[in-house]
Amino acid sequence: MTTTATAELMSFDDAIAKYDPVLGFEVHVELNTKTKMFSAAPNAFGDDPNTNVAPVCLGLPGVLPVVNKQAIEYSIKIGLALGCKIAERCRFARKNYFYPDTPKNFQTSQYDEPIAFDGAIDIELDDGTVFTVEIERAHMEEDAGKLTHMGGTTGRIQGAEYSLVDYNRSGVPLVEIVTKPIEGAGDRAPELAKAYVTAIREIVKNLDVSDARMERGNVRCDANVSLRPIGQERFGTRSETKNVNSLRSVEHAVRFEIQRQAALLDAGGSVVQETRHWHEDTRSTTSGRPKSDADDYRYFPEPDLVPVVTDKDWIEELRSQLPEPPAARRKRLKADWGYSDEEFRDVVNAGLLDSVEETIAAGASPAVARKWWMGEVSRRAKVEDVEPAALGVTSATIIELNGLIESGKINDKLARQALDGVLAGEGSPSEVVEKRGLAVVSDDSALLEAIDGALAAQPDVADKIRGGKIQAVGAIVGGVMKATKGQADAGRVRELILERLDVQA
Image (cartoon, rainbow, N blue to C red; front, side, top):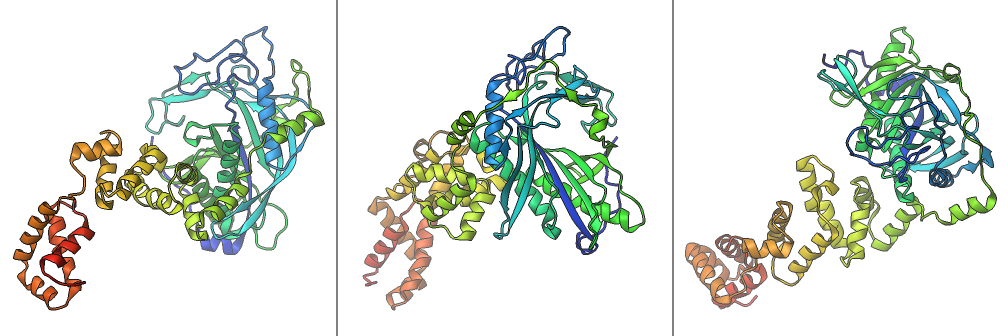
């Protein structure tokens, strides 16, 4: 069974002209504690299936959960970073539903008493426009296991012959961050969606409470979209696109839902309150299941866990441990580095802020760091269709390459060849230069030999230079560079050419 987009779509511009999108996001953040939320089982990614488990994770009878204190502290830090109030007292609840990846037949979560509530963060878009997104709550819960659907062509449950379940993720600590309805985004709605999830990912990574790797599911977004006719106050019926796990996909999913819902409403239909699946290959959503309301989950207080009680001193101690907020850090770095708004925005959007900062801290100038990361490294990453960080280039690589250039051992062209060797696993830049024989030719006798050959091949150019057209020397330099495979010092070659022709510059 293949997944294709069968929904009718209205053009995005027409949709925005007729309807006002209202957004809402539920971002699930896996915490990087050593153990799980309610058991001593390891919290680790990538281990063999069903090895990081304990009786609590498997829902075995007669076992009792114990709350992970570090998970509570991480949750409080997230709440503080989001400008939330921290509850003096909160409790866990049972969210009852049956699914094979939830062996207890309920999820231990928080319902009417979250750990953090009533916050807000400012989200800055590429052009400097700022949207304030209000946070309704950030509550603690546990993750479900992972199902792998086998035998189909899409990797999804539709068309699969059977499913395998891995309980390693069951019980991993989660914080779910829920926004209040976001109004007024208009045609910026998809862009705001991406920027919001980017900001949440940046915050939790900065706090060091999550690995924040979306490709691993450390950060997942449920994107809610509804439309209402322009001028109407009452919200429309929302859809919820579940578990979107890339920044690009969040943007595309919101855009698709706006176009799909607009076409449906314009044709006289109605939007169904449901969960929907995102398909990256077709950049489309398909229907999942009717969206349950809170009553359907039969929430009730978890009888096996006592309430979590905080106090002012504990909260202030955790507040004192918070790092510099990402937005304040960006403002400081931009001023320190002297980048223009556009230059700095490009670095941030490329996800290279940490790499550039680390390279500058290691001794490179801001200009050099930006030149390499935004130039050669980004170009290669684009060709490979990977994130720049995935190439394996480090700040040490950049520092060493730049040092070889500044010492005159290689030029920019040779440095790019040296980087080729580094990425091919041939060693450090210096080792690659040695192995490949990339060092600049500095022996004047060898250069003079190449110059004589170039002059003999282009006697008319030599005559022009002697006649005062000094700019023509570039043609001879080019011939020498070709003869030396780019390994000559162009400046020194120019000097020797003029000396050879007895011409004053």
